[in-house]
Image (cartoon, rainbow, N blue to C red; front, side, top):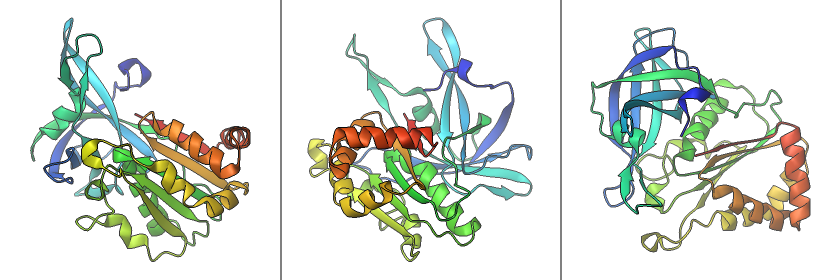
Length: 285
């Protein structure tokens, strides 16, 4: 959750829900793709940016505003002069560690409950840490879990549609509980499968071996399965790693890359180089 004090939210825009559709099957976690039309042509949100949603919440001291950031999940469009942005929202709940009671996530439930034609308030845009490198021979290792696919979907579409003659390798590792929850990479909405013909693009899936038992997603296994190529990419100075997902993704990555490079020390040093060279970026939610 982003705190109100962290961002300038004085500039606010009215947006209307143009479309809302559930992407995941009924017996899985609900993830919706929501398209918003912002009623102000001044609002410009690009693929390397996020925007905020303001909703009212009831707290200990009465009603208060709740602010949550969302990545752009598709190439922004303009319809009759008004910008349209796409977002992914997973309906969430959390358990209070003291009372043990389960509470609905404020923003996610607010947005998942919106209907076509409903009006919401958005803020931003705000810069994401993911940037398309100026070097067209740069390699990109993109690692996302769940709705963490959102910024990478827009990112990949932007590169192959708007950036000409991309020469670097793009490797997408995407984790989901089951094949049905692989957003934009399944039979129903295989948006990113359109790029399988691109010589520079490959996508790898990481799934849970027993999703109904809540077994962990085998992200390490997916990465270690590409040890030879990842080791080669990590030896190159123009390789970038971008990560989007839940907090435990970092532990999984540290374990996997330590194995790939042969030791924890080797990975610690390489990661430090990536960070210092601004070639490592993460969004943790």
